[in-house]
Amino acid sequence: MTDALKRLSDEGVAIWLDDLSRKRITSGNLAELIDQQHVVGVTTNPSIFQKAISSGDGYEGQLSDLAARKVTVEEAIRMITTADVRDAADILRPVFDATQGQDGRVSIEVDPRLAHDTAATIAEAKQLAWLVDRPNTLIKIPATKAGLPAITEVIGKGISVNVTLIFSLERYREVMDAYLAGLEKAKAAGLDLSKIHSVASFFVSRVDTEIDKRLDGLGTDEAKALKGKAALANARLAYQAYEEVFSSDRWAALDKAQGNKQRPLWASTGVKDPAYKDTLYVDDLVAPGTVNTMPEATLEATADHGQITGNTIAGTYEQARAELDAVEKLGIKYDDVVELLETEGVSKFEDAWNDLLKSTEAELKRLAPSEG
Image 1 (cartoon, one colour):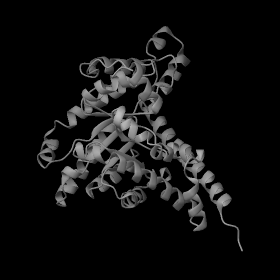
Image 2 (cartoon, helix red, strand yellow; image 1 turned 180 degrees about the vertical axis):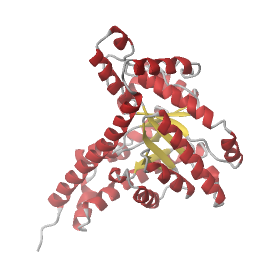
Image 3 (cartoon, helix red, strand yellow; image 1 turned 90 degrees about the horizontal axis):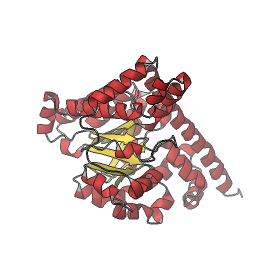
Image 4 (cartoon, rainbow, N blue to C red; image 1 turned 60 degrees about the vertical axis):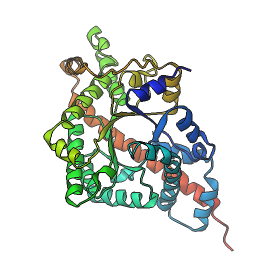
């Protein structure tokens, strides 16, 4: 073991775990990761819960009670997932207190089927914040067109938000704008801005997966030379945008009112292509004021052989822009790629949610008390 995770943390990167299950909570594993692996937060999504609940570990008792009460499958899922998030938030509470609310956070996502419905997303975010009832929760809202006004409204009500499924630089700027507008609303309403936090989850590996596939389709030496470069370039330019927005006059007024910067969070940092080093999206995205949420395999790989050599984003913007421009010149349209990835991202979470509904419904039927 190297102490790469400590070095990463010392560089100003908050290490969050992209996974949660009841077994991880009850076995003491989450507490151990916090204590020994510098983990200071947890993210969840519909796919993570689908995998956890379908595995069955630790859920049967609660499912039996829910079956006896004859609750709907949607209510059952909300009771189960919010219980896990609440318990994880309690385990992370000392981190939350020690970092004045910046870390020690657990994210829970609005129903992905509401991704294109602003009013329903707002209502669901308020409901989730009320259900979990922990100050160190982040409500995840997808960065769809309908999600943007929902972000503003929810932040304006003082609810902390993790904006998810960001792929494009243009959409990321819209997300930051929505966050600032929310803080301005909260300020006008007399809320304490120091208590409102947000991260913007910028997805990384999926960009390489899609663009590399198209580069392979071209098959030229020029195309092959660009493989594995687009995702890092995209994320680095996102950090440049973050630096610009959070050094603006508009931000200065909110900063004066004790507002918190919306930190960039590197999501989807598990490497999909075995040809690349398995710590690529950790080692090469080091900069202060960021979060990297890792699947456990990536966390373990980084702990074992991560190469943390200081800030790997500073000074890269010109090269990053050149690499994205080179991809575009080959006929691979950036706007097409990021639009496809957003559509697919929402769809994958919807599919996972629907699978979760089906498997939970089957469990509720199996555990239902016999009549008579």
